[in-house]
Amino acid sequence: MNIEKQIEFDKIKQLWMDLTVTDGAKEKIQEITVCLSEGALKKQLKDTTDGRFMIEKLGTPPLQNVAEVKDILMIAEKGDCLTPYQLERVETVLTAIRRLKEYLERGKMYHNSLGFYEENLNAAEELHSEIYQQIRNGAVDDCASKELKQTRLQIIKCEEQMKQKAEQIMRSYKDCMADHYCTIRNGRICVPVKKECKSKIAGSVIDKSATGSTLFMEPASVSQFYEELQMLKISEENEVYRILYTLTAMVAETADLMNENIRMIEKLDFIFSKGKLSIDLDAVEPVLNTERRIVLKDARHPLMNQLISVPLQFEIGVKNRGIIITGPNTGGKTVAIKTVMLNCIMAQCGLHVTCKKADICMNSAFLCDIGDGQNIAENLSTFSAHIKNVLEVLSEVNKDSFVIMDELGSGTDPAEGMGIAIAILEELRKSGANFLVTTHYPEVKEYADKTPDIINARMTFDKETLRPTYQMVIGEAGESCAFYIADRLGMPNEMLKTALRAAYGEEAVCAYHFQKEDTTLEKKNTTKLPKLKKTTTKPDLSSKYQIGDSVIIYPDKKIGIVCRPIDEKGILRVQLPNKKIWINHKRVKLHIAAKKLYPKDYDFSILFDSVINRKLRHNMERKYIEEIIYQEE
Image 1 (cartoon, one colour):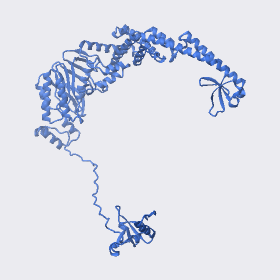
Image 2 (tube, one colour; image 1 turned 135 degrees about the horizontal axis):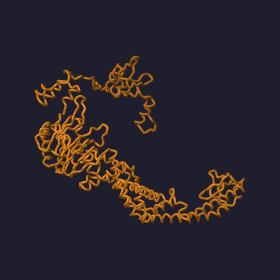
Image 3 (cartoon, helix red, strand yellow; image 1 turned 180 degrees about the vertical axis):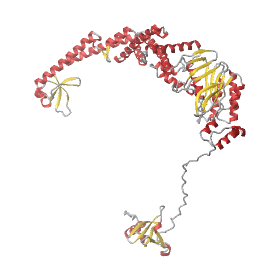
Image 4 (tube, one colour; image 1 turned 135 degrees about the vertical axis):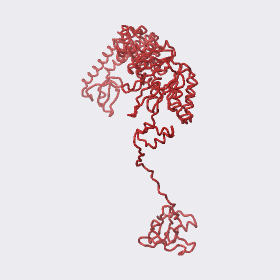
């Protein structure tokens, strides 16, 4: 079972992760489980308190994500050359380490234990200084070395001389130029020369315009500087690589130191994120005990709005080990048991709890059964899912466990569900665990009254406003208020009497005080489903008229002869003098049947075919011909 999801601790962890800076801290939160060592847990809770204190006094710590630097350190250790960008990332992290050391140093004046983590951080000042001086704006700076500075000055001087020579050529051969400025083509300085003036300029053609009318030429006086420029650029590149490899070697030498810094940054990020969460939730540090005692004062659900959340007063393990909570639906029972367990789990994960005051015991396991758990894929009903979860809980429970169960025994026959609920409660009682259970069964309330170590509790309900007050009263059994709510919301008295009679007998009907005069259930105009009209089977019309039948066509009362019988749409074809027409059978009436007008084997093509088609058909029956018979439409 997924305890974190059932009680919404997964949502708390997401809020917590959103407050971290480093990926390492996020991963630690994702994998965190409850701490079972009292000493270690007290240290974790103190770290949370110290982290909150420093944030409140000194502001947010200057932390930075270091995931990228981890990869950069691996590259440097393998011997590959780091790029200026990667070296700048290392320098940025070293700057963050220096600022974090200063932040922690200020915390020492408050005698805060986190302040002394400053001694475990090393800002590698020498490496930081070298990178800062030699790498600027994603490139090796001109002043990184004397050789590099001199080479780059010579490159600038050479490029300037080339440009001056090109401009001198343009001025000397002004009429031969297609434009007023020189340009760079394929890395060379060129002048735009008209095609017809190519022979007047000494030099090489480097490129030409799209139309071909302009040639971009490198003058001979310019090209003599090109080789010098290339040699200078090679010298520059060699010097840049020498500087980068030197810095990379320095990074590799400090890799172990940097990795230790990264681990410390991730640890501090984890601790300070707990302090940030405590501030956001307005939480407090709980007191720990090993005496199976849980006492919460003004507890609230961490995910609920603090302004509207009703504080919960809760106590277990002092005089009893089990609490059975009853009360109306939507009365806050489920929220109450989630609030208790969620605060206990937060405390055992080293977090502050959302209470005014909390005394919480160490628990070896947190077990719960909340929600219907219905699963179609596994063919599990609500009741089956409950029982499956309950049996799993009972197999794991011991005297140091904390168990919550919602709607115990629900989802089946009430009598049988009640029996199963009591059997489960008896097993929990025998285990010695602390447990918190919600139910509606009155027999379970009676069981709690008679059984030692178990006590009833109820969630209060305002009968005037029909709203829950979300207050828990320990020591009193609650009522479901179902009849009262139904009565106030307008259920007719006759229906209520039937319900009371079925639930508690005739005496309950007589004893009940109805809130209103007898009424009837008002029926509203509801939408009715339209019904399709029954359709009769259409008669078969294919045999109504035969080829050759003489028919009368209405309304003109013309006489025609059927040349094609009725199709599936009720249409037939009739031969009239000089033409054939398509017509609906409803406009046609039989005049004289064909069998009365023509012999049995009469050839109707005499009536309906043209002379040419008849002759062609006759020839086709005798021999092969290439003509085509066209069917008249």
